[in-house]
Amino acid sequence: MVTGAGRGLGRLIAAALVARGHRVLVTDVNEAAARDLILAQAGRLDVWVNNAGVLVTGPAWEQAPDVRRLMIEVNALGTVNGTVAAIEAMRGTGGHIVNIVSLAGLTPVPGEAVYAASKHAAIGFSLSTLADLRLAGIEDIDISCVCPDGIWTPMLHDKLDDPASALSFSGKLLTPEGVVDAVRKVLDRPRPVTAIPRWRGLQVRLADALPLIGLRALPLAVAQGRRVQRKMLAKNRSA
Image 1 (spheres, rainbow, N blue to C red):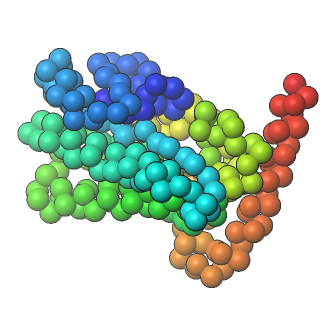
Image 2: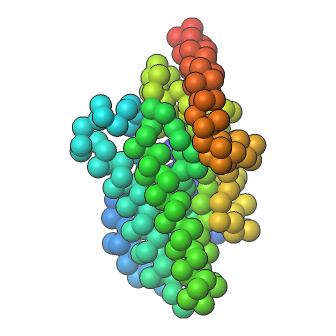
């Protein structure tokens, strides 16, 4: 089961699962109905990937309430509901839930405050629920969070001229195929949190552990992201 699989990363994850021999159901909205349908068709649920996500940039105070609500509902509540639906379907048979989060779930992200809040909620929920499963003696259901840096997917295609999304371009812009490869690895070896690339994960965790230093370094990261945006924009215009 893969949510948000109509395009981009979700579509590639679904294709990768098919290549591994899974019978895959894809959806963009109704997790509960999808869970019931896959159980009716296949008899069990082995893997559920919460991939659906929404990114709208800009300071929170400049965003309309319905825009803020959309990001929280899709990115956070969607992950919550999808994870709970998967656990209900996997009880007694086991399975693996993979939540596509973001490095924004591990660190402050200027220009993407509500998005970052929704991703912090997603990872906090995932890890806490994993702990609840283990405390309840449920060892055969795993939850893995995959936290990639900026990915060159439709989510960022229209953000090259958007200063508020600069931090998404400040590291190594990932390919969807690279993230799919990371998903394959956690399916073979579940891990609570996987940051992609690893060095960026270490970087943002350090910044989060030392917030005053991290906040002071953010203007440098934003400036680097703006340079990458301008370079990519110029290349696209000359192509």
